[in-house]
Amino acid sequence: MKVVFIGAGSMAEAIIAGGLSQKALTKEEVIVTNRSNQKRLQELEEKYGISSCGRDRLDEALREADVVILAMKPKDAKEALEAIKPHVPSTVLVISVLAGVSISFIEETLEIPCAVVRAMPNTSAAIGQSATGIVLNRHVTEQQQKYTLNLFSAIGLTAIVEEDQIDAVTGLSGSGPAYIYYLVEAMEKAAAEIGLDEDTTKPLIIQTLLGAAKMLSTTGQKAEDLRKAVTSPGGTTEAGLRVLEERQMREAVIDCIKAATAQSKKLGLPFLKQISNR
Image 1 (cartoon, rainbow, N blue to C red):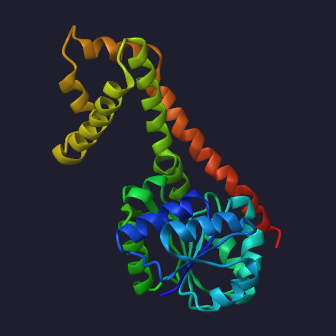
Image 2: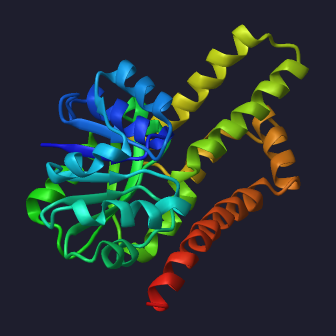
């Protein structure tokens, strides 16, 4: 199995790191390339023991490819697809992790009836803890579907969704880790202001997050019920939650996820227009 990554950014590295650590990928089968940053390719080669190639050898790599993973910036999708189009065999499985780039755009640009998957993982893939939404086109075989689910299951949880749901997945779990990190930043700042040192604060915050996540995943209870169980009348939790309600944190989080979803849709508009103009 030959797996060619087009793009060598943080998401490509997260999938490579997670896939290798969980043995869903082997270093012998992975080839990574990008448009021009040879230093980045060398860095990945040395770190993971994989192979890389420049654009001058891309045709050779693609001819042997069983899987091509599109991991460049979305704005570079058209140029990259045009570059690989002459060399991609019809039997290849194309997996795109590009926000906003539709399956129909990939199909029409490649001009071959190949199997295409849209996947929206997050950067927790690097430690095998991603949450990934997956969309399959009509050409994906049972074996290719099994491979896709195996790859992304090795780096976390997977969910097959319809393509009109993938922008929502992007706004919720694709961008989701950043929302949690933002909350942790605020908790760290608050801890410093109330007199706790960093060495004490960090493990307490991490364990609090891990414990809450474990309660949600193992008890089967709703978040609302777990919150109420912690909130004693007149207690400390109630005092803290009252401030969050006054500052409309719930509404802010909802608007945050809606804004990220809308941005994902916005990123896809140029690709839809290019299809309609053909």
